[in-house]
Amino acid sequence: MKKIILFILLFFSSFTFSQNLEFSVIVKDIETGLPIEEVTITALKSNQGFLTNKNGEAAIVLTSPSDLRFEHSFYKSYTVKFAELDKKINEVYLESTTKKLDEIILTSEHPQEILKTLIENSLSKITIPVNLKVYLREFYKKNDQIIFFNDGLINFQILGNSKRIKTDILVEQNRAVGLLDGDIDAELLGYDLNNIIENYYQFTYLDEILVSSAKRKYDFIVMSFKNNEDYQVIKVTPIDGIEGVLSDFTIVYDKNRMIIMEVGSAVAESRLEELRRSFLSSSKIYKLEYKNTFRFEDDFYYLANSKEVIGFEKKYKKQNRRIEVNNHMVVTNFNKQIFQYNEENVFKYKSLINKRTKFYNNYWDIESGFVSTKEEKEIIENLSSQ
Image (cartoon, rainbow, N blue to C red; front, top):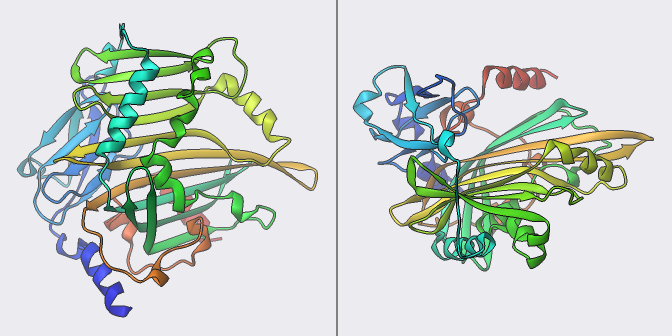
C-alpha cells in the first residue's frame, strides 16, 4: 500500500520541479481595464489548468516552460508565449464579445431539440475513462456569516462510459478550518462528491428543460456572437406569469463540433423569495446556482472547472437557520491513464467535511491552480484561529 501511495504522490506532485517557473497573471478587459473572473488558463505543453479569481488573478506554477491559453466564454481566446511572461506579475488583456451578443437566430428546429442534440453529441465525445486532478474548496455560511472552510487536492478516477459512470475518489491532501454547529446535520452539508461528476458529465441539471412540458414554462432562444463565429448560445428563461422556483439557463456551445462548452443556471432574484418560503416547510437542498466550463483539447473533452451554490433553511429550537454552501472545483491536470490503487484508499464519504485534516505542504498556494483573494485569505486565517 505504501508503494502505491508513494507512486500517486510522485505521479501527481510535480511542483518540486517548478521552483523557477512561478509567476502571477492578472487578466483584464481590454476596453474597461476591469478584472475578469473565471478565465480558464491552460498550459499547452503540460495540460495544467488554472482559474482566475474575482480580481482576475491567477498564480501560475508550471512544471515546464509552456505557452498559456486564456479562455472565457464571453471573451476571445488568447494565447501568450511563455517567453512573454517574464515578469513576476504579468497583465493579460482579453477582448469581450458579450457587447455584441444581440443577434437572435431563427431556426427551423426548436431550440430545445438543438439542446437535446448538443447533449447527445457531448455525451458521445466526453473523454472516459480519465483521471481529473482537482482542487476543491467550499465555504459554509450560516445566517450570511462564513463559519467553516475546507479544501483539498482530489483525484477523480472516472470510469465506465457516459451512460454509466463510476467515480473513485482519492484524496491527496485536505484541510478544514472553523466550527460547524452541532445542530447542523452533516448529511445536509457539502456536495456529494461521489455523484457530482456524474451529474456534470451527464448534464443532469438540464433535465428539467428537456421534457416536453418545459416549452409551456420557458422561452427558448438561440443567439450568436458577432465577434465569435464558432460559439452560439441557447438562453432558456421562465415565461412571465409562470409561477414556481424556475431557473434561468445559459448554454454556450461550439456550433461546429456541436458540443457544450459552458452550461449554468441561476434562480432570478425575483423568484428567490418564493424559494425561501418553500424552505420554511422543508430542509430539502435546493440548487440555487451552478456553472460548468468544459474544454476540448486534441480530441480530449473534459470538465475544466465548476462552481455551485446551494442554500436551505431549517428550523432549530423554533428559529430559522439559513445555511449556504459555495463549492468551487478547478481541474489542475488530466490524464487518460488511470493509475492503480487499492480499494481501501478510495474516499467513500459524501463530503470532505467527513475527512480529517491531513496535508504535507501549502498545496493551496502551490498546486491549487487558484489563488484566494486577500479578503478570502483573511477569512480563512480568522477561522483557523478559532
